[in-house]
Every structure is written in structure tokens, then in C-alpha cells.
Amino acid sequence: MSAQTRSGNKRLVGLIGQPVKHSISPAIHNAAFNHMNVDYFYIAFDVREKELGHAIRGLKALGAAGFNVTIPYKQRVVRFLDKLADDAKIIKTVNTVVIEKDRMVGYNTDVSGVMNALMPYKDAISGHEALILGAGGGASAAALALARLGCNRITFVSRTPSRARRLANFLKRRIKISAKGMGLSINELPAIAKACSVIINATPVGMWPNIEHSLLRKEQIPSGSIVMDMVYNPPETMLLKEAKLAGATCVSGLDMLVFQAAESFKLWTSLEPPIEVMKSVAIKTIGRFV
Ligand code: NAP
Image 1 (cartoon, rainbow, N blue to C red):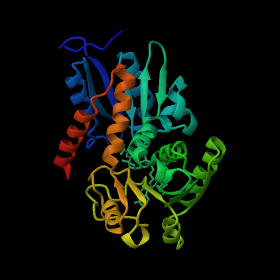
Image 2 (spheres, protein in one colour):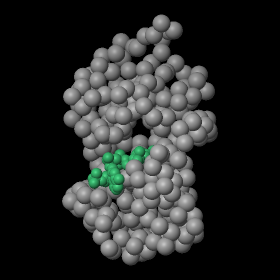
Image 3 (cartoon, rainbow, N blue to C red):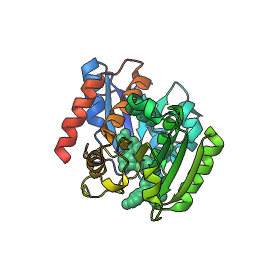
Image 4 (cartoon, rainbow, N blue to C red):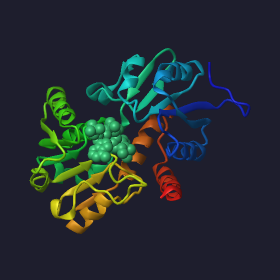
């Protein structure tokens, strides 16, 4: 059964998370669908935890082509799926689901989102150390991307030290990378940051409306390092401002957002995504919130 609307044979794709009210994914995907003239439409669904299974099974029953998954369900969604593909299987974290005829397959396009955003800096990453701030789903996607780019060793620093240690141990087993986890309030953070050629913020710190916050100051950021903030609203966060002052190369979470969305678009439609259109809509839509 395919999804029907009063306007014809449109196929539904969606976003499941809580909250989703400020998501710009509907704007990005609907602009891409319109630009490519394909009959899909994208809706964000604010889903309560106890309704997660019903929501997923409901989308399948309605003939949706698939859906994105965001905080806080990227790991919890796994048990409702029939299969995990590639990167999602390694880190057990899903941000995109494709609903095939009789099964639901989970993917993780955050990994390729980070990889594509950092690809221009591959030579600076390969053989070097990285610091990841945070230990959630975004941090694990970033770690897998860094490992693929040849990064040597990763330190996870998290507000909850046990979570950082657990993620480091998990990745050591899954992808055979040298990794360690520690607490955010430790005194060693500046020294660790100084030894790293890549720093990625995978926490919400600095996100609108708390835009004046940054976990690192310019004195703690090595000049010549690559600093990426997964936070995309604002596109230039306080961390990136500090990094710029320190003489680092800055990578906005907006690049990752667009690349991961492009990969999801491709999975649902089998078409090449209109990346420039998606990026320009993302910038315009964020401008309305900042
Ligand atoms: P998550 O699984 O909930 O993990 C969040 C991490 O941030 C946890 O380690 C958490 O620590 C830490 N954290 C939360 N609030 C903090 C605070 N006030 N101070 C210090 N640490 C804090 O979330 P996620 O999926 O990894 O996402 C993390 C961020 O990346 C979000 O802002 C998300 O929007 C962004 N993101 C962006 C993209 C993109 O395409 N640009 C894609 C994915 C995610 P505790 O364990 O102590 O709670």
C-alpha cells in the first residue's frame, strides 16, 4: 500500500523525536523533493516514549517510505527494526529508516555526514589524535567517521564519566580503535585538547538560545587544529568563534546536517540529492530561529 493524500500519490517520510518543533529537516527535505520534482513529503512527529513502537508501526502501516530518528530515540528505535545496515550495525545507533516492502532497515547517515564534512581535512586527521566532547549517539557517529579517516586515538570527555568510558570501551571492541573516556570536569581537559589535531563537540552546549556557552576557550584550542561543532544552530557557535581566534580551521554542524540529510534523501528516493538547494534552505531556515 502506498501513502495517499488528497493531492495524489505522495509518499510520506517523517521525523520521529521529542522535541521536534525546531527541526529544520522538514524544510530541507521538502525543498529537495520539490526541486527534484519527486512526489514525497516530509513531516516531523513529536512522539512520546511510550508511543514509540506504535508510531513506527503506524508509519509502516501507512505506507511511508521511511523516516529520520532524532533525540532521544536513535538507540531506542533499534529494537523495532528488522535489520541494521553498515554503520548503524557497528554503533547500534540509527538516524534513518527505510521501509521496504515487508521490513524496516536502519541506517546511520550521521557517520557519512561527519565524514563528508571532514573529508577536506583527511590528511590532518589521519595518524593523529582526536578529542570528542560528549558520549551519546553523535559522539559514536563522529568516532566511526574519524576512524574511517585514519584517526589514531580518540578521547571522549563527557559530563557523565561512566558514559564516556563505556563508549570508549565499546568502540575499542567494535572498531579496534585506541580510545579512552573521562569526565568533563577534569583538570586535564586543556592538556588533552592541546595534544589533539581534531576536536568535535557532540554535546548540545552552545545551541540556540544558549549561544554564549562553549566547553573550550581559545587558549585551550591548538592553532592549526580542526574544530567541528555538531551544533548547527547557530551555524557559527561560540566554540567555533573561539577556535577561529585560536587559529584553528572551523567546520560547522550545518555541513554535517546537510550531508546526513542528503544521504537520507538518497536512501529514500535512490536519486542524487540536490545538496546546494538543501544547504541554502538550511541556512535560510536557521536564520528564522537565530
Ligand atoms: P545525546 O545522545 O543525547 O548525547 C549528548 C551528549 O552531550 C551526552 O554525552 C551528554 O552528557 C552531553 N551533554 C548534554 N548536555 C550537556 C551539557 N549541558 N554540558 C555538557 N555535556 C552535555 O545527543 P546526540 O544525538 O549525541 O547529539 C549531540 C548534539 O549533536 C546535539 O546538539 C545534536 O543536535 C547534535 N547533532 C547534530 C547533528 C548534525 O547533523 N549537525 C547530528 C547529530 C547530532 P550526559 O551523558 O552527561 O547527559
